[in-house]
Length: 341
Ligand SMILES: [Zn+2]
Image 1 (cartoon, helix red, strand yellow):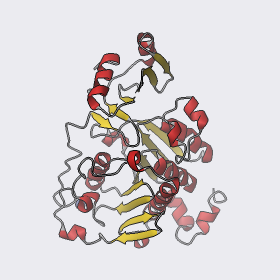
Image 2 (tube, helix red, strand yellow):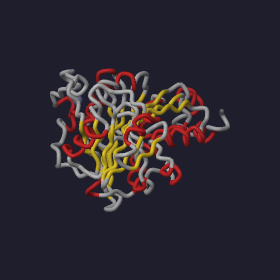
Image 3 (cartoon, protein in one colour):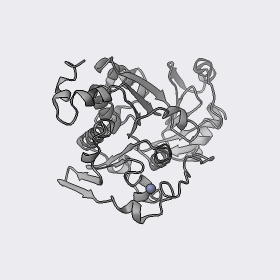
Image 4 (cartoon, helix red, strand yellow):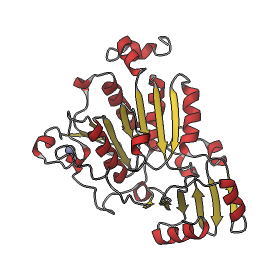
């Protein structure tokens, strides 16, 4: 092992002790898109004990521009992101336990999915999931690293419970719908995602090896197109605020009983629908039933039905991503008609 990690061990901030500690650590990555692909690659190469990768989506052609773990063959096989990622990551480092979960992280599964995490890395594309993760991490005292990017701009911040402000301290509330740009409208260049993910992993290595003194303590904002790097000082926000999460210890997102069953997805002309009670679909039987409705294909991870300009992708737990519309009622109608509630 010492040969494999020789250059990292030679580095003054890690050393042999740091490497030994790293190899006992479990990380969880939420979202395996542009940020997640780079983070997962770097984390697995660094030699952790275990990396869990959670993502709800499958690979599309427009992902290949920036999602560095995927290729054309994965698309032709209709693979969910985490399945393709796990295969690649395990080839990179067979000594790290890589686990993959095709799931939408929500209050009902967060305890199971994030269990035993030493650190959580944000690779998501939405604030609802980030605030949920923030609630969970503050409650359990687990550090997490926020990351986001759009266009050529990226943001990142470390949230170390009891040491730094939390995401809610900084953002107070979810920005109202429509006020945040999405990859859909703004596009994105790949280098900003690689850069933010690289910073997230560097910070993760510091946290995991106990190098708290060199942590980035601000909200870092980088614009690669305009050549701007800013560090917004948020260190004293926690003292001034009466944060509902880390001061009042009210975990609104974690205790939410009515999680969004229908969500419009970033960068996609698509809507996600969750099955109300979770389900156990037999995709093969569903394929037989839907054969006359349109063009059906399936593998062990998902079933796809093409009808007119719509494409319904259904997972075994009943969750569906309906592309070709951002209209929730149209998506709901298609779901009810073909999959059934
Ligand atoms: Zn807070």
